[in-house]
Length: 383
Image 1 (cartoon, rainbow, N blue to C red):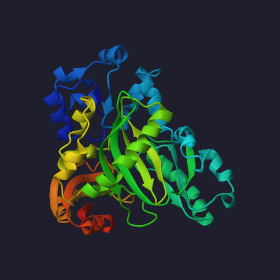
Image 2 (cartoon, helix red, strand yellow):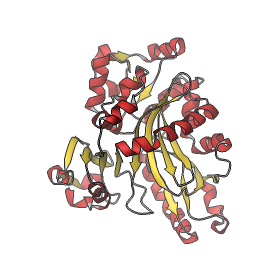
Image 3 (cartoon, helix red, strand yellow):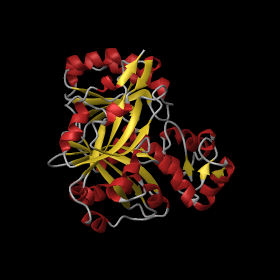
Image 4 (cartoon, rainbow, N blue to C red):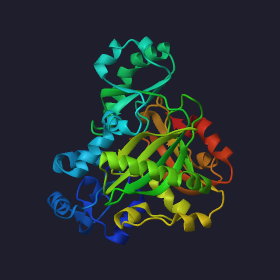
């Protein structure tokens, strides 16, 4: 069962649904993309899950409200709650990472914390969050105090964009800053709780304070280096969290000595349908692999690949540019930054925080590094 929700549904996902006749929950978003014969009523969706343990997938965490309302007592909802609540997730993983520091705090009590009692650098973020919204790297007492001053305005912005099931700013998590490189992966736990990895990305940043999602990339060396290591960690997480029949997107930090999960995003792969890049990079349709319980033959797939980097980049709109003041975007000029574009997806910049998602490939990491630091304002025409 697929639940389609805003903010974005790719043509690739719709074509996959039609090709495989996958079941889709009947809702307003789905009716904008699919004829009636592909749609399943709420009653039938609940019945299918209860009778057959129907596997679920969504393109957006906005659908979590539906699960919480209609399958509240299900194992599926329990796995979602464990995943979305970063504090609960940390407590659950305590047996695997006993020395990792984190602290929960209600928003209204943050001001009562004496920052001199904290160990910097640290990360402050909502206990329930999405992408990089509300994630603050803080390096000193002075930065802590400045962040709290700006937090109220930021919260109003988050609450106007996302429902509380996606970003909830009533509770925050303070946790130690994990050193090392950041990675992300798309995978699912099968019926036995074993991890099936469908893609691995490296998440580069322009500097130590950058928390944006401007670009991610994958390659044959990345897959070969981390596939088995990440599988081993995921299987441990499945055991302590009792995960089964569950698709997810996981973010991790890798240092010389540790692999530490940052957060697990439930019931979906990489957001905004960016997970589709697996098709361009590896020939893997992640939706088909999940619903048909397929496992990639990575030895065979990687044997045919060279050192090409496959990546996606998001044309993110700077926070201080008001959407109603955007007149147009020069997509043609923007695409000059991409040496080998594989797909460009124009996004409605009047209602979303990005104006485009582009898939590309390159032989040089310099191209991706340039995307991280380029001035994106020069492609946005304002009134």
